[in-house]
Every structure is written in structure tokens, then in C-alpha cells.
Amino acid sequence: MRKRLSMLPVVILGCALAVAAPAAAQPTAVPGGFFAGYGAEAANPGGDPPGVNDWDCRLPPEHPRPVVLLHGTAANAQINWNAMAPALKSEGYCLFAPTFGVLPTATSWPMNVIGGLGSMYDSAALVREFVEKILAATGSNEVDIVAHSEGTLVGGYYVKFLGGADVVDKYVALTPPWKGNEAYGAGVALDLASQLGVEETMSNIWDPIAPALLQMAKGSDFMNEMTESGPYAPGVTYTNVMTRYDELVMPYTAGYVEAPNATNIVMQDSCEQDFSVMRPSGPTCEASNSCSMHWTRSTRSLCHVSSCHRWSADQLAEYAWAGRCSLLLSSRATRRTFRHLVFRASSQCR
Image (cartoon, rainbow, N blue to C red):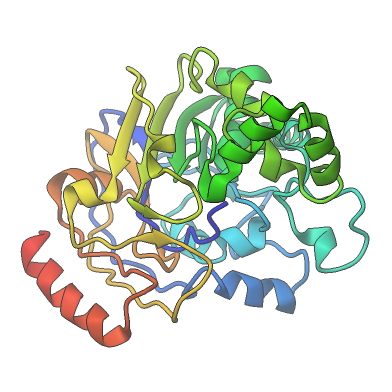
């Protein structure tokens, strides 16, 4: 599902600890674009993103919990987080990212390292084991999760049904399909199959190929479990980040679920000139990195700026509520249009 986390609008690590904020740091240069992650994968098959899965990482006082990064469909840890990880690591976070959902029939590269395709039930169980390993290695009692697209459901299932609520403090969901995905008729097709009595046949077709795609569709058994009584677990603080221009999770409001322990952020509610988009095609992106990055007393956040995957830490509060961030580039925009829009956003969105 959303292949390009790429700078999609920002991530929140949650609502705040009443802690004084360190001085703002300058944005860190990071590899450009979601597809830079595929280049990194080709160069280092099955490798880790920069700064991720350092099992000797020691948690600093300002970031007392490890951050678990959960990738989306047809990606893996390296592909999905190649751009965000360096920026977060430079700010002192201990980062960990599993690859889950590799098809059991995949025995050779690249399919044996491409995740987000296999059963999400199995993926959620793998995440549980991975988190247990992180807690043992770091000595922490809790983690924060930042998840993208399908990863939001995998992590959400772990939190809600597999004991994750006991150890997860903040849950940041980037473009989550909490209500089930309806992109390109997925939900309609599943409903029609059910009415025709061929739902099992459809499952048999998809199971060897990519069962996760069917499980994410609105009305699937997996989604019915997730949506019953709501997708959230008590005691966990959720932040959902969405863009109206999402082209892989549809409607984008599939991620908008209200609850006392949830904050919903639609990027364009803060700045209409923000053309963040989730799509796997389009010209090379550039991004404005003019947002300051720091802890706020009221909110802790993780943010990536632009549709090109350029993440930084602790920025969403400033972006979403104070409107200080410049626009994010749409993957459809030309570079010339981008420069023009950045100029406009600089004056209109600060």
C-alpha cells in the first residue's frame, strides 16, 4: 500500500511528556526519495537502513524508548526507511526495523527480501518477537512505533491482540488504512465475492501471491477483527497522519478514526499548498527542509518533509498546528512548479 512514505507528511511519536525541549537542530541531509531505498537494497541485498538495528545502541535520556519502524507493502526495512533513518539516528534515537511478510515460497533475491506480502497475522507475530528482542537488548520496558501503510495494520494487530499494548507507549501511523482499503475497488471486489459465494476461491487465488493485499481490503476477516470495537488499544497514544492526495490508501479517511487517545492529522488542513502524495510513480522529487526540528513540551513527533521520504525528528507539532513547515512536493509537480510553490508556501504556510 503506499509505497512512498517518502516524505509524506510527518510522523508523531505521540503526545507529550512535560519535558523541556532541547535546542532546535538543523535538518540532516538524507538520501532523496523512496526509490533511493530500492537502490540501497540492490547495493546491499537484505541489509539494514543506515543507523538501524544497532543492538548495542544505548538509550539517551532525551529519547528513553527505542523506536520500531514498520514498513509497508512490497517493501522491507531497508527500502522503506532508507531516507528517514539517518535523520532520526542523527538526533539520537535508537532505531529498529524488522522485515516481515516475505512470502514463504520466495527463495531467491529479490523476492526473498521483499516483505509486506505474506499473511499479516504471521507478520504481527513476527513483530511481537522482534519487540521482545529489542526490550531485552536495550533494557527498556517500552517502545514507540512508527508504522507506514500496511505496517500500521500489522503493528496495530500486534498492539491490540498480541500483547503489544503492555509495552507500546506511542503509536505513529503514517497513512493508515484503519477502516480497510478500498483502493481500485478492493473492498467492492471482496464484497461482491462474498455475495457470490466465491470468497474462498478469491482467497485461494491470492494466498500464494500476496495474502496481505486481500487482508487489507475493507470487509476482510482481518479488517473485521481490527475494526470491531475500533482499531486502538487502551493506554496507547496514537497519531494518524494522512494526505488527501493518497493514491494507494483510499479513501484517505480510512485512517481517520477518532478516539480520546488518538490525534488525526490531515496534512492539507494545515497548509492547502501541501501536495504530499502517496504514489509509486512520478518525477524525481525535491523537498523543502525548512522546518525546525525539536521537542515541544506538548507533543513529541517524528516528521519527514515532502513526498520524497526526507524524515526528521520531532517536527509534526510545529508543522501541523503552528503551520511553520513549507509545503511538501507532490510527485506530480515539475521542479519548476516546485520552486514556485515553495516560494508561495514560504509566505502562506508559516
